[in-house]
Length: 473
Image (cartoon, rainbow, N blue to C red):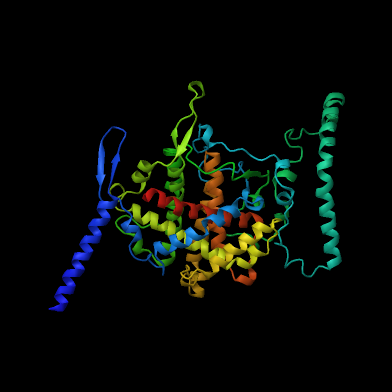
């Protein structure tokens, strides 16, 4: 008899809690035509319920941990070392001949940094990518080379005015056949100011095989972008242009479930790949809904552009009833991606702590971040993937790497500069995380470009989880 009472009480509790959640979180979605849709299932109950599939962690624990470290992470990302990211805007799209629809909105544009506005320690940063190759080189030779490089960078800026003066003189007074080739007048030495030349001779096997690295693969030069001044936000880049990018990713470059099947039908490695991509997609969508263009700028009317959270757009993107009940799963994949990148930061802790940040505050904050990541109890476990040597050396692992590398190539096809910057940064960050997870710690080496992308990408998904709480209210 007591068991019957317990069962009745349990059923009553389930009904009461479920009803409370629906009543508390139900929301009315109003559309542009004036119609509305009362959604009783738009609460976050599906996200909050239970632990993540194939993980030993719940979304609640992840959110609690993220709340503790987010402010510290933001401070790190405002440091000079992390705020400047290199992008090559001139790489051709390898997937289709025509340039993907160019964004005509001024919101798509970014301001590139003139080389004299980038801190010297960022421009002249020297990666230790050659460390093992140079161990057999006598210390004296290494010191001489360092001295020559330092003097080269020290005196090269002083030569720039002379180059411009010579060009002006030759163009005005010398016959055409003696005139020098015209340089870039905005920047007489573009390779010096825009390319991280310290990567140029690095062995290919030491460079990230999961994604392309613009400074390493660039032949025409990269621009520095100040990520703080060019924040990620809604630009108006949408429709067929943006859809073409995601269609290519999910259609050809992702282990997506086939029609009539679900993610659960994929093997663990394929599910992991899909969840990472879906988590990235969801995170970007949350960013855009958080910094949505609520009012267009109109200088003639004296009306400024207004940016802010668009809860209606968020509901359209993730509401269960409007997404075939997939929206909550897409949001869960953000938490999955968070675990992947957090684990990478913890595993690469020694490499991150060995970087010269030229700022004691940033160094100590990175140390706190690494320590927190290391002490997190519910880590993503990369050892569950590709367990056997056959898998690690076989076709599936090669396909895993190649597919993600192709996605990084796809970022060159974006017709929106701001989207390209943040797309490249986040994809490079995930690629770096995967490199860290599948590289023996003793063999791991990272370039500044990879470190910047890794920590900024983690910052992006961390911000997404914080914004999720704002949309919850």
